[in-house]
Image: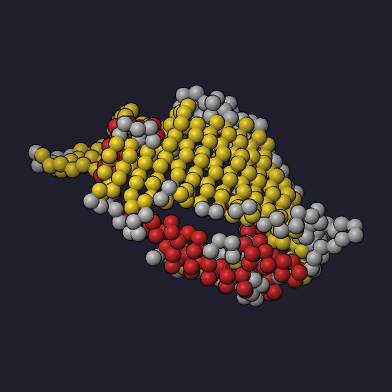
Amino acid sequence: MIKFFATVSIVAMIGMGFSSCGGGDDNPADKTTQGSGNEGGGNEGGGGTTVGDTPMSKSEQTDFLESTAHELITMAPASDFEELTDMAKDARNINSKNLDNWFGDIFEKTIEKVSETLDNSYVDSYYSSFYYTRNYKAAFEIANYKGHFEVQNGKWQLVQSDVDDLKFTFKDSKNDTWVLRAEATGPFKKVHMFALRDRNYEYSYSNNNNVYKSYTDITQCVISIPKSTVVTLTKNGTQKVKTTVNAELSDITGEEFDISKNDISVSVVVEVKDYKIDVSQVVYKHNNSANVSTVVSKGSKKMLTASVTSTLSGVPSVNVSAFTNNFDPHIFEYTEGNAIIKLDILGKVQVQGKVTKVHALADILENARKQRESESDFKSDIREANEHLELGLFYNNKSLKQANVYLEPFEQTGYRYTWNGSSSSYTPYKYWVWDMVIQFGDDSSYSTMANYFSKSNFRSVYGDIEALIDSYSKLVKK
């Protein structure tokens, strides 16, 4: 599923031209099949014409996507962030040892030892070893991190502690005053978030015996999440950056987060000069639905809009005890929800569609991977997987589908190492993989994403991207 959604993300980026800037296929025609040619894939044929209208040709779509990419790339020049990187460079030169110690001392005071067990040991006359597991619990209370810091003699110094916020003030090399301020307001909810694992060793020598002790330390971290958090960065009193996070966790009690019982609603707004990232809706309704909506804009212009909604059912509980070792990656294994996806780039390029029974699709693709050496079984799985997918490419928010997107099986050759007792060899074998392909609505051709969005097809876009990356790289290295 990581591969699948990563590929969907590539589709989302076609208007930006931010697919891989490496390699690309300089001769994509070798791998672009004319006609439908859909071996084992779903959505056979072309891309859904509308009476009285027809999809653009492949070449017309390439020109349109290229134009959209150029427009988007020019909207975010590196020069827009120059003063922030200059400030960051000056801030990095400030001695922060006092600050590190202050944060560390507060955190250390919250660590509580829960248990210690001897897992294994070995003892003889000259050597002894003992292996322990120590369990700790730590609470990150943002309310404890309050104070005003200023730079004095090149070092961060705590100048005021009886305050209700966290603030850092310093002057840069141009004598401009920068202030970073973080403020959190309650109510606060304690939620188990993750575990930290560390190893410590002790050695001692006594009575002609070398004693080694090994400790595996597991610290369960609980974070106190405020209802609202606001972080601002100002220059001479003018706002340059602002991040606002609002979290609704009212039905969570104690330190247990049970997704079969609890709901979550979070919104995040990040403002950087003229840019704004608005994650306006991250909502999870237990055993019912989940959705997220994001808008990236510059000034009044929306650069990218993305939204995903799904319906979840039969999701098991998650609580602190589930994190004792490692987080269970199959926690959503009973999910049979549907996902509706829409991505909009500059109001010109839209990728939209749906995925039905998300986990069933994940199971099918995993089964295909396990049967990748059986052509018939692999193709059968990919056909079934495509029945869960309905993704299309649209332009200018019109209902005319310009292209279909689906999965396609491809044959590859691998080599196995064998040893017969006296010699070794590498034996070739055939196996199958799937890739996401794009079928143009005029039935002119279909191609894998990598081959279509290659350097040869979008040479000028790749040039713009490389120039943009180079300008940001120079900015960071200043």
